[in-house]
Length: 348
Image (cartoon, rainbow, N blue to C red; front, side, top):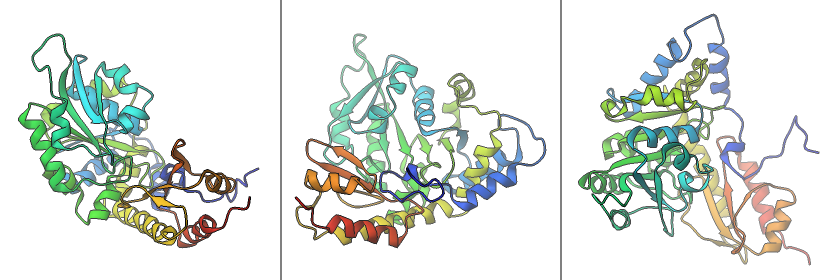
């Protein structure tokens, strides 16, 4: 049985990490007195201004409860049921939302095969067909993840190229930014360089994977596109009554550089692990190590031996490909202990 007072560190997901002490303290500090519900409170006002400090003074910021809700709301606000969303076939939107985007928006997802999880302008244009034909869904939105589900990154220029392609065809660009802080830290650029400055129309801004208890936000570059958002947020069950506790977490992460610092640390721990296992026999790293994820192929018996003591995700069982992720609370000792286990010979 797991010791609930001292659970072992694992490399399964940054969702497995706890809450950063500064974020937890912000929630406690917000737990005073009576204030307005549903965002009519000073903490939500402060969170909105904190995010605007990173993304621009005119953006619309809408705190929500979770990442699935953020993505679904972003799609719903910009589409109609006869529209289509172009995304990578590995996109969280297509794989890990249990069909919520299609069920709740009516849109069809056009998921595109891609070796590294990244869309390109050519891949997007390959899906823009049947425009104006009433028998076909109409492409409306391009959705990318930053970082991608493979841990790879879009540069500002790559995002701008996708935005320009989308806009040239009358489409809009959405970014699933659940790990945006990791991407910005890895590229050493401000958050706006990967979003508003690059032409992104709507962003799902991450909080939970960045060190929060549970907090996300939707950000619109042009507030006029979000006219229906208040009604959609309520009807899609993402308008929490005690929203101040969500907002307090966002303010803690984004009023300064905490989210970026935590992302930088997680990335460094992944780089440390990648370097430590680079020469392990029969282990091949399959994707570029750019943020806080490692994808590797190793013999099934080694996978089984490692999983006996440390949790991590088997990404593709057919290839024996695994995913190792670090988080804001991963320590060098955590990495070194796991790397030593990876290098241990597997006894027959």
